[in-house]
Length: 395
Image 1: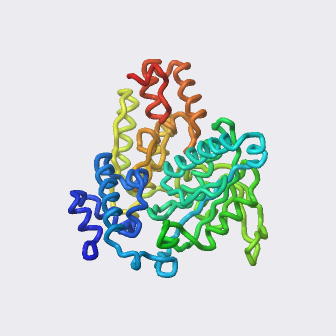
Image 2: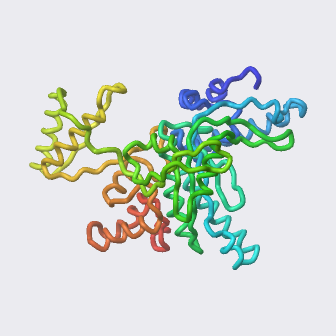
Image 3: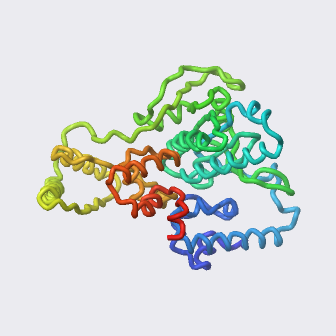
C-alpha cells in the first residue's frame, strides 16, 4: 500500500465516484479503519457501495496489520497528530449514583448499555462520531474524522436530542451536557498493543468542565459555539464562570432550544424580475387550479439563492399560504434527514431531534384528526422513523 493513495484504492474498488468526497473530507488511510456505516451514509454513499467499502476496509485493515512489522507500528511518541476544528460533546447521566445504588450489577450494566446505545444513535444521526464511553458518560466529536460546515450546530442539536432520548428509556434518565468548539489534535493514540483514534486539547477539557458545571437537564455551551449559532440560539447568558484548570473565567451559555435561521432577510429585494415573475405565475396557478408544482433554484455559491427563496416565501405568505422548510445535511443525508422527511416534520411542528414519543404523538394526532386514513399509518411511521407495530411489520 505504500505507493497507493486513497484515490487509486477507491478507483480499484470501482468506487471512483467518491474520490472527490473523500478528498474534500480529508479522509486517508490513517482514518480509514475508523469509518462506520453512519459515516459512509453521511458522505452520501449508496447502500450497496457502503457494504462494499466496509468489506474492503476490513480487508485493508487486516492486511495492513499482517504486513506491518511490529517495530513500525506507531507509538504515542511517533504518532503525528492532525489539527482539526471540531465541536466536542459530553453527555453524562445525572444522579447515576442514586440510580445504581438501587440496582444490582447486572441491572446497572444493562441500563448503561441502553443509555450508550440511545446516545450513540443520536450522535450518528447528527453526523458525529462517538469518541469513547467514560463511566456513565459519552464523549462525541463533530468534525473528525468527517467534517461539516455546521459541526457546532450539529453538536448542540445532538445534545438536545440526547435529553429526549434519555427521558424515553426505561427507567427514564436525565443527563447534563456540555459542548465546546475549537482546535484539537486528532490522531491515533495509544501503544503498539492498542491504538484508537481520538482528539485531545483544551477544547476537550472545556467541554468536560462545562458538563460538570451543568445540572440535570441542562446543556451548557462555550463562547465559540454560541457565536456559531448566531440568532438561532434560544438560551441564556450565564456570564463568566471560573472552571477548574482554566486560568481565566470563560463565558457560558445555557441552551433551551434552537430555532431555524431567520425566515426573511431584511431590506428591500432588488432585481431578479424574471425569477419573481416565475414565482408569481406558480402561485397564481396554485390558487387557480388547487395544484402545486416544484421549482428548483440552482446557481453558483454567493449569488443569492437563499435570499431569492426567502422572497418567494414572503410572496407566498402574502397570498395566504403557510410556509414550511428545513435544512438538509450538506454531505449526503443521515437517517430521517432527507428532504421529504424534513418537510414532513416541519408540517407536523416537530423540532429537529424530536424524541420517539413526541413523533408518535404527532403521528397519531393527525390520524385521529382524519388528515390521513389509518391505512397510511405504515407509511407515516416510516417517514417519521418510528418502529412499526405488530400489524404493520409484516406489511
